[in-house]
Image 1: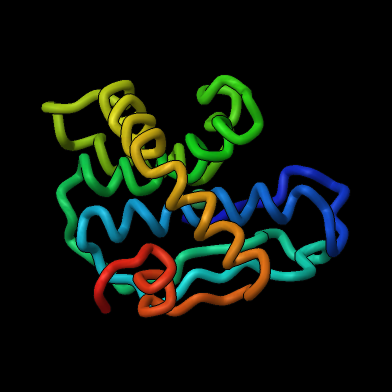
Image 2: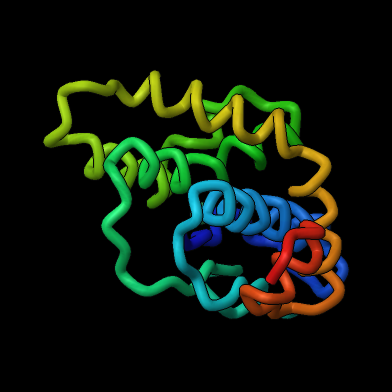
Length: 156
Ligand SMILES: [Zn+2]
């Protein structure tokens, strides 16, 4: 769920921040899509000195492994779509990828490829919502669960 910094150059109005916002917004939309609890989404305004740029703060939840892995993969998948890069290139070396693999490790019904495909479908279907939420995050830095639902025009 957490975005590790892998790009050195981060300044206040860096495109990196918008990328992070899209990444975290996609996690958020996936949480909402599956009705999973979370408290807030944070994207730091100045992440230049931090080793992570943003995160979705959520309590422990016991979502099925496929859902859990889709929620994890949605971030990098949306990032890849925004950047026009192959998903697998963006996925590699992310903690999201490692955690998605861990989530599926004991579930032989689904492969990682299945989960990536489902995350891609989710991101495509909800792209406008992801972009809208990303822009709100860019402006606000922190959005509560209620504010996320408001942004997505869903009842709170
Ligand atoms: Zn992530």
